[in-house]
Image 1 (cartoon, rainbow, N blue to C red):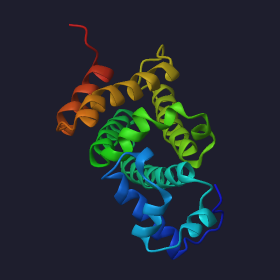
Image 2 (cartoon, rainbow, N blue to C red):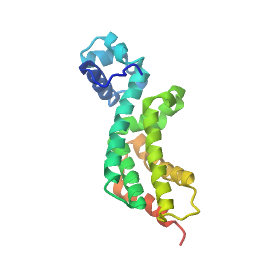
Image 3 (cartoon, helix red, strand yellow):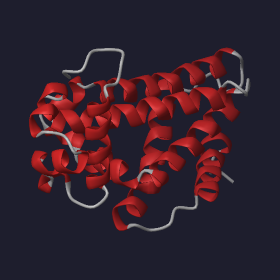
Image 4 (tube, rainbow, N blue to C red):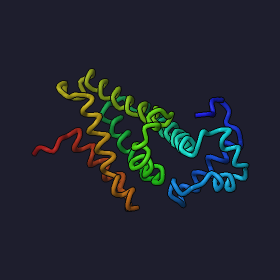
Length: 197
């Protein structure tokens, strides 16, 4: 990641916006830096001032998305003290984010995880922060007796994350409508109330 400053220069903002717009129209691999520069009305060389390559640009755009998402989640859960309610908010907010940002959701679910350098990116660090947030809430719930004491917090986190991804994977890939309320309520009901009769 080349850009280290606290400011966000206009040229960098234009490049990221141009790339995001192109991502809504084309496959990542078919987008060229020349197209990005043309749409952003900047020189192609300016892209390399702020980004190592096209993949770095993708990771930084994803990072921006994840920072905004994490901020939204933290703001929403701050209004609740109950662990179950906080986890329900995270489930709903995650499904909402996947549904509202389908292009980047598709890239995250199907593409970038196959690339080892993604795991060194700021975007992946934000995913880890999101994952830690879930784990901290689970541990708090165990400590305060809101969750059963014999629950493994790491396994519960995996169950929640897996349920979120699988609930929207087909809808995102095939462009189907996702009923966020119904699906998030269904996941929360099974996870927190169980499936046993």
